[in-house]
Every structure is written in structure tokens, then in C-alpha cells.
Amino acid sequence: MPKNIIKRFLPDHQMIKRQKVLKMFGTVLHDPNLWHLNRKSACGAFGIGLFFMWWPVPFQMWLAAASAIPLRVNLPLSIATVWITNPFTMPPMFYGAYLLGSFVLGVPQQKFDFQLSWSWVVQSIETIGPAFLLGCGILSVVFGLLGYFGLNAVWRYSVNKAWNKRKQERRTTPS
Image (cartoon, rainbow, N blue to C red; front, side, top):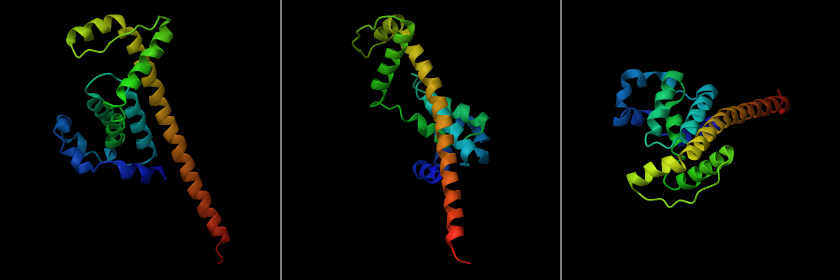
């Protein structure tokens, strides 16, 4: 069942409440709905996490938390899902976003050599930036929706399967 799988990978909510980064949200974190795991809260949190993982900003977790709180979806899951983007996955993901953006804009792909400098970032925003940001925006929406509806379908299938299994067991069990 998706609930048991998700619970196995989520950190303890008390540990998350103690994070200094999340102190800015104050007592709002004590809302039990932010920690409850059901189909609605899990699907919403998964969609939010997959949406913000495509944003090329260093504070994706804050954005996911800031969205999860007013939408009252599972906070740990929304934050953990953003961690799909990490130093190993970002280069291929963001390069794919750039390729998609350049395809949609109909501009030729430009060769570039990454440099860790502010001047390179400013220059890149002017050259490859529009295609990259458009690709990130498109993938953000697509993955957010796929995450929400995909987990919803898996959750419903899992519950339906469990119900049918119990129904079958009741029929075969002698009274």
C-alpha cells in the first residue's frame, strides 16, 4: 500500500519541526493536517514537491513548505519529494529542460561550458536563459500534475486491490 511505503521513507515529524529553516513558519507547523498521511494529502504533497523540484533556485524546500502549509497537505512528503533534485540529478534534468525550452521556442541549441562565476550566470541568462526557464516551467507543471494524478491513481488502485482481496477472503473463509 502506498501509505506504508511513503511512511517508511519520511522523516519523523518532530525532527522536521525542530529544523531551524522551518522556524519562520512558527506555530502553523503544529497543524495535525500537515503531518497526516491520507490520499488527498499525499497526492497534493507529491504534486507540490515535483512541481518545485524543477525550479532552478536554491530554496526549493522553502517554496514546497510554503505551498504545503496553506494547502494543508503532508509537509514532510512535499519537502522530501523536492530532494529528487540533487547535485547528481540536476545536470541531466536541467539540460533536458533547456533542450525542451529550445525546442518549444524553435531556437537552435547553443553550446556552453559551465563556469562557477557570476559573470557566466549573467551571460547565460541572456543567451540560454529563456529556453532553460521555459523548459523548467513546462516540466514543472507537467511533473506536478503527473505526480498528483499518478499517485492518486496508484493509491486508488492499491485500496481497491486491498478491498477485493478482503472480499475474496471473506467468500472463501468458511463460517
